[in-house]
Length: 478
Image 1 (cartoon, one colour):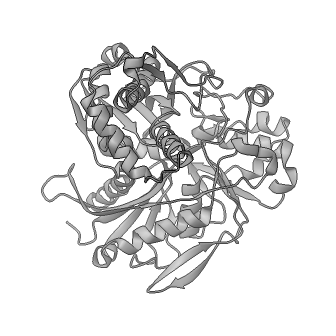
Image 2 (cartoon, one colour):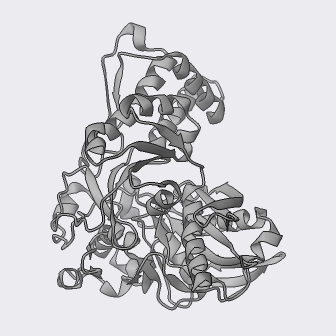
Image 3 (spheres, helix red, strand yellow):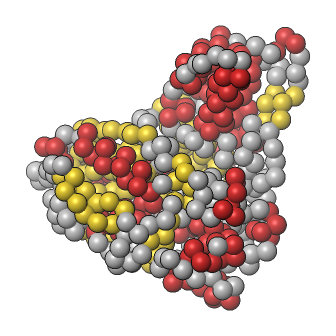
C-alpha cells in the first residue's frame, strides 16, 4: 500500500458542513477506515438579494458556508491532512450561486494555513427556495428530460431572476452549485465543471445524451453561458492550485457530486439495499438494474424520480421536502409559544423532552400530514391534523403523530410493496434527524418491516472521500 492513501471528503449540506478523512482498510480492498471527521453548523441563512423573492426566497451566505468549511479543516489532524492524495466534494443539490470569472475568491494566509475567501459571489439560492410559483413554472418551456423542473432547481431560479431581476444576473458570468464553486476555487478553474448528478438536479439536462437542452433554453432567452461544462461523476476536475491547510498543492480534486449520491455510495453495500436518509429533508433510494432507462418525458405528478448515479446507472428516489425541517419548525413553534407566555426555554431542551415524551407514547389516534413545505409532485399541498380528541393532545401524542406522519408521507410516495417488488431486502438508515431520534426509527420499522441498519452522520462526506479513494487505488493497481 502506498504511503499516501488517505482521501478527504467534504459535504456542504443545508444546515451543516462536514469533512471526513478516509483510508483504505489493510488487507480488505473494499473496506475503509474513517480516520477522523468533523461537522460544523453553517448558520448561513440570510435575506434574499432580490426583494421580489419575498418571504418565499431561501438563500444562504456563501462566506459563512466557507467559514464553516475552514473550521472543519482546522479541526482535522494535521499529520493526516499531509497524507491526503485526493479530495472528494459533495453538497446540497438543485441550488445555484453566481460568481465572476477570475474573481470568485482570494487566497489569504489564514493563520497557520492558506484559505480562500469568497469575493465577487452571490448568495446561494437553495433547493428550499419557493419563489417559483406553480403558475410561473407552468410558463416555462417543457424540458427534454425525464426529470421535471420544480422551484428551487437551478435553471428555474435563473429563469425567475431573468424575469424579475435581470440586472442582478448582469453582475455575474459563471454559475454552479455551492460544491461546484468550492471545486472551482480549489483548482483555480476558469469555468466550473459539473457532474451529471448536479446537472440533472438543475433541470433542463438530458441524462441520455449527457447534454443541456441548449436549443430549448436559447429559444426561451435563457443565459446559456452560465451553464457549467458537464463531466462524469468520479472523474477529476483538476488539482489544488494552492496548499490548503496541510494538503499539498497539486492534490487531485474530484468533480463535485450530489449529496444524495455520495450518501448512497458510502452506505449501499448490496444492490438489494435501500437507503433511507432523514436530515433536513427525506430521501428513500433504491438502485435500478444496469441498463435501466427512465421514461423519456417528465411526469411532474410522479412521486418517484430517477437520478443519475455512477457508470450511467440510476437511483429510484422518493425525495420528500418534509423531514427534520418539519420537526425543527415544530420545536421553533413551541419555543415561540413559551416566549409568548413569558417563559424562556432552549430549543435543544424542547427537542429532547418531546422525543422522550413520544418514546413513552407508543401509539396515537392523532394523524398529522406534515407537508408544511408541500412536495415537488404536490407543490400546493399544505399540512393538516385530523383525528383530534381531548385524549390525544399531550406532547407525546403530538410528537409521535408528527414523526409517524413524516415516515407515512414518505411511504405514500414509495410504498414498502414497491421496494419488495424491486428486490429490496434491507434498509440502510442515515442522516442526522434519523440517527438522533428513536421515535423516527420506530416509525421507520413500522412502515418498512425489513432489517434496518444505521450509518454514520457524515455519510455524504465519507462517500465523497470513498469515490476518490477508489480512484486512487485503481491508479495504484494500473
